[in-house]
Length: 90
Image (cartoon, rainbow, N blue to C red; front, side):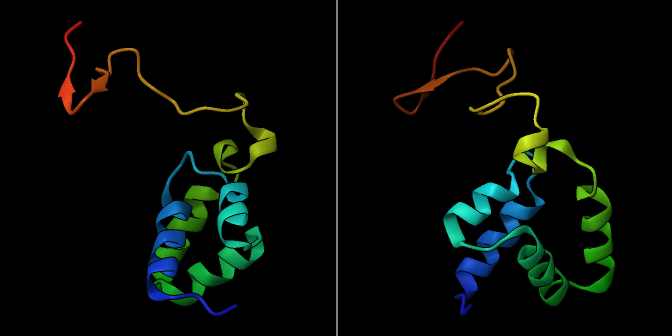
């Protein structure tokens, strides 16, 4: 699959994000988990790849079926909501 530099950058960014499952990458770019791993191995320094693999391996949030929540984003209860480019007061 021929990916642009921007697409590769976005896939790597999504792969590094803890709460972005591989299914989201598959849906958006058509790459399966193994293909993402191969892309990461090709595009990253060996030490960075090893660090990423160690971080991702066994992480439930990277696999939709292992998540303990169905959908939506995590939002801290102390996170202020933003509306119309201004932070609303509590």
